[in-house]
Amino acid sequence: MSISSNRKELFRSSTIEDKFILFQLLLDAKDLTAGSALALLKVIHDEVSNQQQVNGFFSKRYALLFASLRYHVPEIFQQVTEGWKSYKSPMMPAEWFDDNKNIN
Image (cartoon, rainbow, N blue to C red):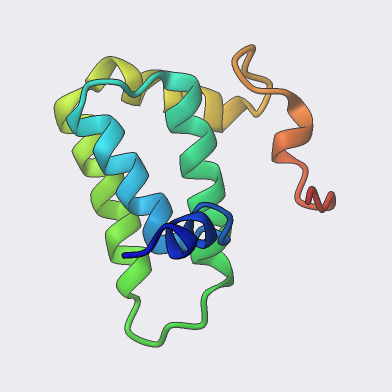
């Protein structure tokens, strides 16, 4: 790969697949915090909800992320589920959960 193509790759928009990979890499490296898990899962959730996939591939993959999180780091899973339920988590600003705002 040439240097110029590497630079282009740095500034491309991330795909839903990239977000799944990032989450799994952080989980595998044991470098996932409750805040980063909640933020990534929220973004992934929004994208999965917007996908028009008939086979439900991304929904299944999303469910597997939660299962993996619950199995490997139950304490972070608990914090994520509590934060998700309340949407008033001290880890995450309330505007991150406002679906009416478009942040670019």
